Every structure is written in C-alpha cells, then in structure tokens.
Length: 616
Image (cartoon, rainbow, N blue to C red; front, side, top):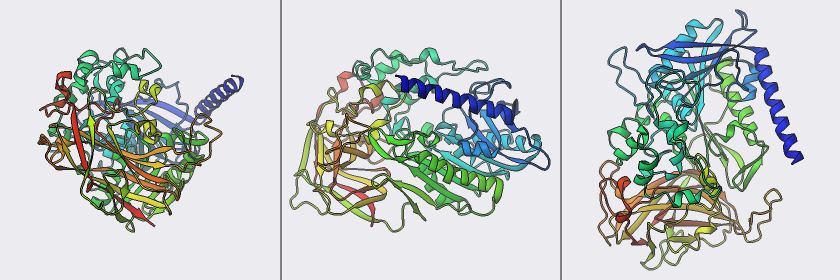
C-alpha cells in the first residue's frame, strides 16, 4: 500500500510539473474558426512564448469528438502533442472540437460521409480540415507555413479523412488507430454487431442542444452492478431487448438496428474509396492487439499505397492495444504476454518524433529516413523493417482443417468433416476475464489464453505437432471454409492460436498465470454466413447443403517458434463480445427474439483452408 501511494504521488507530481512547464513555455488562446458554411468550430491554440519573426514554429493539430478540455484560457493541458519529445521541441499545438461536439457548433454525424463538392458551401470533415488549416496559416503570427495532424481512434479517422483536404500547408499526417469503414471495424465486424461495445453508445448517440464543456450524455451511461460483468450480459437478453431497455432514444443505436446490411448508410461512411490525390507524408499507426481498430490502419495504409504514388506512405504496427503506443508503462504487456521494455518510448522517440520533426521542421520534400513498414513481430518480440507490406517475399501457405483434429499443410487423406452443435441459448464465451466485461470496450481477449474454449463441445480445434522450426506469418490471412448447417444462418469465428511448450517457464510478474501450454490468441475474426456472397444482399443457408464461407482475417506478423504448436479454433457463437446470431435467417437479425433462436448441427469439411502469408 505504501509503495502504491508513493507511485500515485510521483505520478501526480510529474503531472503537475508538466502542467507548470507548459504554462511557463506556452500561451493559450481559444477561438471559433469559421467553416465555409458559416459553422464555427471551437479551437484551442497553444503557442510557444518565444515565438518570433526569427523563431517561427510549425503547427501540429488534432481534431476530435472527445473534447479538447480543459476549457478556459487559464486552464492548460497536462501535456501537449502526441508525445513528450515533440512537446519539448516546441510546436504550435492546435486542438479542435469537431462539428456538433462540446463547444463547437453544428450537428454531429458518426463517420461523416464524404460529399461531392458541387458548391463552395458543401462541407464534410475534409473541408473542415482544409478551412481550419487555411485559417491557422493566415491568422497565427510567425508560423512557418507547415501543418501536421495526428489523432488516435476517432481522432485517427479525422486525421485520415484530413489527408484528402489537399491544403498546400498540410505536409504530414499520422492517422493512428483510425476507423476506415464502420461495417468492418469497431461497431461491426463483417457486419456482425460487437455486443461488447454496448456501454459506449451514449458517447456517440446523443446530440447536444447547446455548447458543452463536459459530457452531456452521462445520464445514459450504463452503471455496473457487480464486479463480475458477465452477470450483466447473461441477464441482458437479445440485442433488441437491450436496445429497447437502454437506448430507445439513442440515434446511433437506432441507426445500427435499422441498417443490418451494407446499404447506402454504411457505404457512404466508407472512407477508403475517397483516399485519392494525396501527395504529402502519411504515417499510419496501429496495434496488433487493437480490439477496436485493427482493420482501419491496415486498410488505410494499403489504399493510400495503391492509389497515391506521390504520397510518402509509411505504416507502423506494434504489440499494442488501442492507443497504447501513446503511454509508457515500462514493462510492456498485453494482458499476460510480455513484449519488452519501453516499447512505447522507442516508438515515440525513434519513429513518431522523427516523422513529424523531419517534415515540419526539416525537409518536407524529401522522404524521412524510416522504412516503408515498421512492424513488430509478436512472436519473436522484435521490430522488423520492410520495404513493402505485405512483404513481397512472402509465400502462400495453406493449413487444412483435417477431420481428425490436426492442422495439416496437405489435404487430409480421406474426405470427411468435423461437426459441432451450436445453441444460441448457450453461447461459447469470448473470454473468461469477467471483470473486463464491465469496461468501456473489451481489449485483453485479443491475446487471451484460449484453454477455456477447449472443453466446449461447440468449439472445433485443429492443431499441428510441435514445430521443428520457426514459422513466421507475415501478411494477410484468408479463411476458406466449406460448411453445412442444419439451420438457415450461422456465424463463423476463426481463431489462430500460439500454443506454448509444456515446459514454458513462469513469469515472476504474473505468478498466477500458468504459461506452460498457454494458448495465446494471435488473431481472430467473425463472419456471418448470410453475407458469404454479398454484404449488400444477404442470403439464407440451404439446410444441410455444402457451401463456402470465405473471409479475411486482419494481417499479422507473428513467429510461431520451434517447440510451439499452431492451433485453429472454429465456433459459431462468441459471447458477449459479439451479438448472438439467432441461426435462423431473418431480414433483420438484430430484431431477433428468443423464439427465433435455432439450434444447429454445423459441419466443417476437411478441405477447408486457412491461407496465410509466410516468410523465411
């Protein structure tokens, strides 16, 4: 207890020191910046006190829907910019509440659709970025004419969409954990609804009626009644029942319920088709264990790379959960898995600081001395550098799901299948970290020990022998399942697992964790069978007929070490992370009742394949 108190006091003193340091070195002012349609966006600007005609500074901007507090020109942030190295270098730091949020005017829209700019007053987030940059360059004295932007999570989206603002002063952008398409990231995964996000909806689905300097949506927040969060989800009922109880007036929840398929509502919010005409430096950042936004950074990087030959395009993927590269923890863990010391500091000092300092203070025309892809191998636990991502040297390798429970590199000798009985009333758990179910969003499951699933009769397992050499997965993963179900709909969950050796040593930091035979999840994804041919036009399964369900898992860089095993787990329920599929085809499965829940026998044929990219 004494040590804990000393740690808390140290953190408080460091925080107060940082705040004093900012007050001593920066001036703060708050302004409303007008957009082209007349809407004014509230903006806080921190300017170095020593700025002068012979000492000009670039600008580093973050636009956010999460508040730019503290408000008031005498109230200063505890830190500025994305990391302490950039704060020490001194920039003009700019923070802005986006439309409809906190102190800004306008109406908030989730993942604001890009519009066709037919008139000078047509607006979206890219025009708001342009208008903000233009105002800053023209109105802030002694700026050097260069602007960079950054943001993590939703601010990562605003950074990503800002890359197409095409203002000449915008020379460097770093979208971090950005959303690219809500149907495949964050709230939906391949169209399946992420039930584990249920507590987040007040933040995104309540409009404010006046300027606000604190959360106006707090009365909608769901309060925990037990430290065991599984109780809440087990008593919750169907998705429709949950929405009726908690979010009848929440516009975002009601929009999701009304749009189960990939219709114009979702398509208009897909940023990827608009990522064109980018000619400045972009560094997209993500975490391999980001349970919220893993698809976004990978897809944004790849799309910019494909469509923008003039862009200086870089991707960084580390062993991080959502945004964890922004805070140093000393020993870096994700859940129970240790990855090394001071990994966030390495990223901040050697990658992020280098990127912004080069383009904003040195030479924005010449590419920074960083690799195209700075990627962390989560098996070997080292940083790797690549000139392309996925690596051009990677080769395709198939793992076949043999009906004897083995994972084979060649087709199984005889034609057969594995079978399980899936009951929506008794779903397979997504985690046994019951306390985390009370959290805002689940995170630890991304690398959680999966031994709890082995005893479930509705979870299939396919496992290699102990590896005789290292196997490095580096790039994309494709699940190509051949299935048959006695029902008319089903979800399919694929999990890729690294099984540790039987003699894996213990870790003194985690005395209660058994690492011998630890089943670490490396990658996972869900796919509703209804979308197997089209996300726009779902189709029922024909009972007991063989069909293909093909879908992508997110990329990976992970070495399965010699002496480990590779395992694939397949299941059709994954609760409470994902909403339960009734397993009965409905026009809108989100409106399913308990009466719609249908038990099913599901076969997975042994010519099903998990296709991976591997490198030597």
